[in-house]
Amino acid sequence: MLTIAMPKGRIFEEAAELLRRAGYKLPPEFDDSRKLIIDVPEENIRFILAKPMDVVTYVEHGVADLGIAGKDVMLEEDRDVYEVLDLKISACYLAVAGLPNAKAVSVAPKIATKYPAVASRYFREQGEQVEIIKLNGSIELAPLIGLAERIVDIVSTGRTLKENGLVELERIEDITSRLIVNPVSYRMKDQFIDDMVERLSACLEGVN
Image (cartoon, rainbow, N blue to C red; front, side):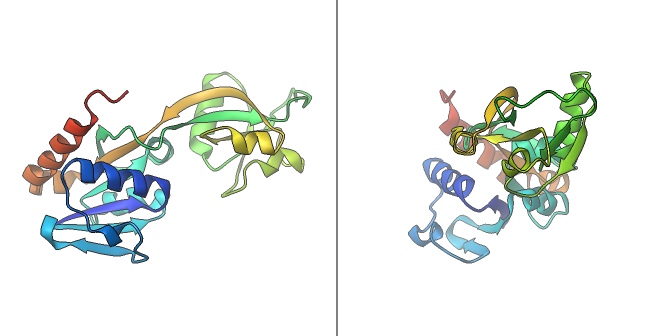
C-alpha cells in the first residue's frame, strides 16, 4: 500500500481532482470525509490528511511514502525528501507587501512572516539588513498595528492585501504544489511510485 500525505483545504480538493483525472478511483465521500486517515483499498492507497507544514515531516520520517506540498513549504523547510513532480495546482506566489505610504526605515526594518528562512534569504540576496519577526497567522495585521514595516506572505488573488489596505511591493517567487517522495520509499516502492508519477505527468501535459 502506498501512503500519501495531503494537506487539507484547497490543495486537497485540487489534488483529488488531479488523481481522478489520472484514473485513480476515489470514492465520492472522499472529498467530504472528516477522517484524518482514509483508505482506498481498490487502489491500494492510504491518504493521511495533515496541516501543510506537517506533510513534509510525515514524508521525511517515512510514515508517508509520498506527499503533496506547496513549494513555499519546500523553500522554508530544508528536509530530506525528493521533489519529483510539479503538479501545477494551487498556484500563488510569495511577495513582500506593506502600507502604501509607509515611511522607509533606514536601519533594519522589521519584516513579519510565517516564512523566516525564505524572507531572510531574500533580503540577504538584496543586500538589505532586516529584522525578521515570525508569525503563524494573520500576517497582514503586522503593519496595521505597528509590529512590522513590511510582510512576506503568500498572495493568491491579492484580495486579502487590498481589504487590509496593503500593497504588493516585490514579488519573490511563484509557488505551486509538488509531489514529494521519501528516499527509502523511492527505492522500495519505485515501480508503484514511478507509475503514479507517469500517470500524473500525462494529465499535466500541455498545462502551463
